[in-house]
Figure 1 (tube, rainbow, N blue to C red):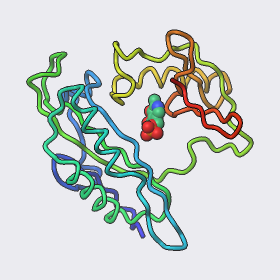
Figure 2 (tube, rainbow, N blue to C red):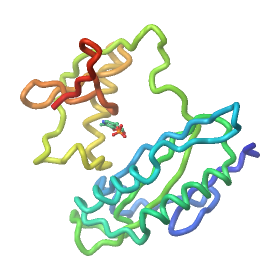
Figure 3 (tube, rainbow, N blue to C red):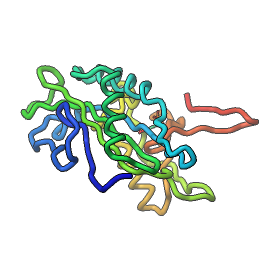
Length: 210
Ligand SMILES: Cc1ncc(COP(=O)(O)O)c(C=O)c1O
């Protein structure tokens, strides 16, 4: 059981979360030059066990996406998996959890670029329940903001800076009284929601956007 102490993996070690701070000069803070993952872990009260959903696959995607930004991570996928499990053990969560790894340009230097900068990866976790708490179904609007194109900032990269696009869509929906936004691509086809995938069920078949 958590005693209220919170931890993060930061600069190569697990530290109290208060110590996991970046400088205002950090490259990623200035330019959004990082990639992240969102990993769920589900608490099973009968087994008293926390089950992480596809830990390795998420870190494989993080490392793959890191290459888009020339992030040279000083950890292997296996090391990132192990340290995440250690972090969860230290936290002692007994509830559903969201794990947030961030690979980012950690140099404290100005200059809009991706090359000649150091990289690091930080991880923290927070208790997290349902994404939208509405058993009768989410109220959604079609956003007036369009999804970024793959040749501008690739959405598949989960690039920090690109999430301004998601924030614009989400807040527009919230300010209009909706729970969520459906975001279209430039060509008008459905892309996804602000920060989640969309599926359509037709005739018992799952259909995903192209
Ligand atoms: C824009 C966006 N789409 C979809 C997802 C769902 O991601 P996953 O591929 O992990 O299900 C996320 C999660 O962070 C997201 O931010």
